[in-house]
Image (cartoon, rainbow, N blue to C red; front, side, top):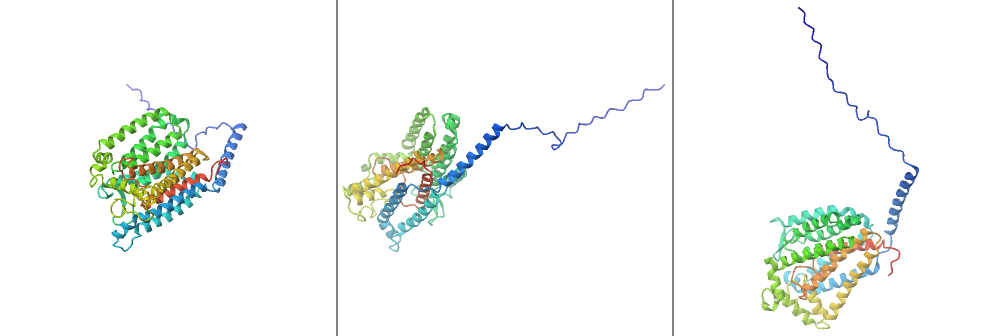
Length: 427
């Protein structure tokens, strides 16, 4: 008996896949003549804009703004020399009474050189600096809070650098510039999207909370206020919905109340601010000595270099409270003139922002001038007792090489924008 012979099993082979180079390429739809012409016109327009930007970048700087900056810088150096002379004499045992002035003068020269150099650069190139500078500032601010890394002065840890040397700086100064550059670049690329919460509020609010949240624990309340204020001003100019402005102001008010009246570190400052004469030898000592200096100046002042309060009565006489020495030596009239020059510089800055060539330039100037304006207001408010005492310097006047150099570099950015202002500008 024979059995049927089993048939061979069929062999299954996977179908060979065509190699990428063997696959048929999808044929692109041929570009119509109208589309080709439109594309060519866009390229030509872009090329013209770039060429126009290069030509405008060779234009003249805004001379009134430059003169006002140099005027404040010159007066600031003279007042620093007068205010710091006694402290420098005592701290160097009489060897170098010009210690603070000479160091500040070096940074002033470097800052002016940086201002002139940056003023000649096409400000469009600053777009690429925003994001990396923001990342760098966050890293540096985090390092300040690491025990043993951040340097401490006057019960505040705000510095990085080499202890015992002049190579020390505040990362918060870099953070201010980083926020302005990044916000200007990002917001300038959005128009109607700025009115939405997702694109106009959320990303920028998160950045501000992170940066200000790293600055606040140093503790550096004034620095956090400056960063939040500049960011909010740029968002407002960028076109956010006004409905969000009211909510932001309410949230800021609640946060400020918590920081000032709940946090113990600032609560004592509020108490001494409300009644500094209750403890004139303790918590109210600095403010009372500042008020004495201001009152001693009268209308015309005691004369340049003739202050009495700078002889170890008023703390920080060459730094945060240098405006009190200005009032004592130059009087009410001199102080008003200096405040008028600051006001003229701020107004001229906003005028440049109004006449800027594009949104990016306008936002850059708004952020920089807002930083300087708010900082000037806070310092004068603290010195005169209008605001609670907090560590904040007066631009161009207070001792601090890093801060002065960065401020002058920021003025250079404003001058760079002024080179490309619209032709309708008036002097």
